Length: 322
Figure 1 (cartoon, rainbow, N blue to C red):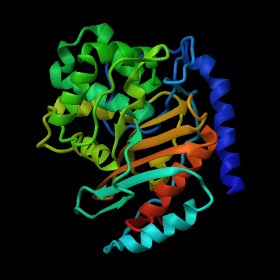
Figure 2 (cartoon, rainbow, N blue to C red):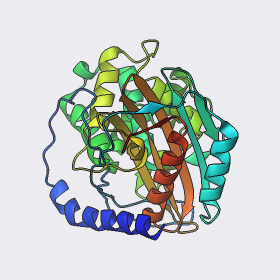
Figure 3 (cartoon, rainbow, N blue to C red):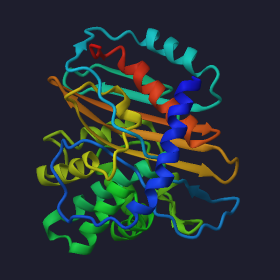
């Protein structure tokens, strides 16, 4: 556990050093096609005025790429009780709320942990904001400035770009309506402003809804067009820098990863919400993964928890040879 915290703290240190460079980076208008690797989340912060009812979006965290072995062995049978006991043992010393779900979209096998929990998305909500935008307007019909905001929001996790797109989709009602079209049942937009940002960061959701959202990015039956799906996955698969934490902790070498991470410090209790949602595709399988947590004392601990949960669940779906 100490080693894991050390790695996460080093990642946080790297983030601080790299942020000044990222803020000056230029962004291409055209998103690459999935499955380019290497996601990062970077928050471009404005002035923050904390209040008792508001939430402060947290700083960026950057980590190195993680590669496993060249192929996988798929586990044919999922035993939920075994996974739950494994997670319970892991989390017993971590005072956090956790909900998680993994679905093998190829075979239909799935597992849910604390499926009744509704936790906040933090910046993971930005994936749904982009999907809502593309449900309204095809990518090629968007003004160049809006396309740039889409890239900034996903690749850099720019909060102010997210605010502009939030308004463009109609705010909380537009966000909720898009979620309903995408099959979400437990996710509704929060109206109003939180500190100096709109309240998309405190959207409550279920792990199952986040899996539905990821499924909509790869299913031909999705209300999103093939071009829209390609654009979203392209941005989620090529985020700036080299951040690779959360969902990507379960990748095997040769896998293609697309994800959106989020972290947010609650003003009310000074604890952190850390989430990771995404897709791992490779070796004939597509895995949708969602892990949401609340209550970590710092970002590093939240990342370690998210990765620990991801790895322990995916261990029952497949193994990467060492």
